[in-house]
Image 1 (cartoon, protein in one colour):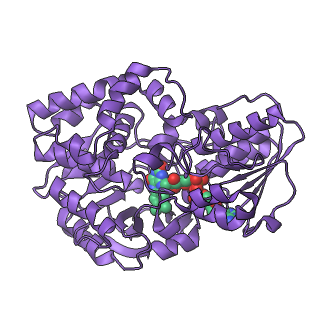
Image 2: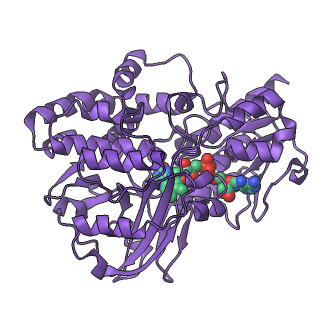
Length: 482
Ligand SMILES: Cc1cc2nc3c(=O)[nH]c(=O)nc-3n(C[C@H](O)[C@H](O)[C@H](O)COP(=O)(O)OP(=O)(O)OC[C@H]3O[C@@H](n4cnc5c(N)ncnc54)[C@H](O)[C@@H]3O)c2cc1C
């Protein structure tokens, strides 16, 4: 995280992009004494962490991120004390439920044993408990190591234990279990990687998300994720930094003079904006950066909670709706083959069940997305609603409003969502650890004044601010050496 001592008093920094990483970077630099300006193309800061009334007045939807397992454990946000700035976490009784067509569900509970028992198979329950207990018991050490810059591990045995299972594909991890419920549950978690289930390291996503669920929960922010953005903006203002909205940066000519520039953008945009500030060889490597599948995002206004067949789903913040592992495998393979699955795996969230402040009485919101081919402009609404109806008969009767965004809409809303990729790049082996290119210090570029701070750098996607913190620490170290 670097030093918070005022080592850079009076030096200037410009951050391009006010997503959670850009704002976190701005806070770290301003706290160190730099004069920081954050330039944001949108009319408000927040990037993938905004909340807005999209359908009916007074009904609030998280436009992008909603369930925040990494934010609540983030060393960056802890150091910036975002809770003191007004973030209040809302923890549903279950972080996640995974229903099956027979009307039952496996649950991710805060209690490892309850999760294990929800598989309905004593052998699988034992395997799950053995797998998760050491990770959960040492969660602060593990997440600190995963989210921090690559370095000689402080907890090598813990990391090795995690790594041995994490290097597998989602399918490989699921194959440790024999029951349909445990296998489907693991597949749903691994699908967050956006990889086909047979590609590694999908298991890493499943293990981190499951351990986070047990150790820290998958909370929402009361009132919407926007409050997290507002707390970061308040911290930045407190440290003397400024945000300028409605300010797209298309070229280096658009940038005011500064000692350092941090870009909260993905490699493709960086090449377009600041390619002439970078040597050709590095630029070429950036253009080889690969993006992942896109998503089709939907938001609904409902007159009542979703009428789930499985009772457990009424107690869960997030629902993984994809049925058994074979169905999930087909769903997650299709986007990589340029297809959309008939019954796609849906990641759904139902925040108003636990946070009534987001909607007036008699109204609920539902949030959800599925993976589609990168850049797809197809309307997947019918597939999505058919899948929900399958697990919640009567769903259509409670819907009073809906809005959707295909990949093109998402990229227009936020240029970092290249082709609708919400992960700022594919999470295959190389790009998980060496984003955006293989380099000892990935946030630095060959230009000593130019740094990258987006989710296209380690530790990658999700709202946790760690890419921004790591990048800002790198910039401060560089200034210290000058
Ligand atoms: C639909 C969806 C659902 C998601 N769900 C979750 C979730 O539940 N939990 C979770 O943890 N994460 C989730 N994510 C991922 C999360 O939102 C991102 O990983 C995170 O926001 C990345 O932060 P960032 O600061 O790197 O980039 P972003 O949040 O994308 O911010 C980049 C900012 O830079 C601005 N910008 C880009 N180009 C320019 C330019 N040229 N000039 C000026 N400004 C520019 C953009 O407008 C944007 O504000 C989701 C994302 C999406 C899209």
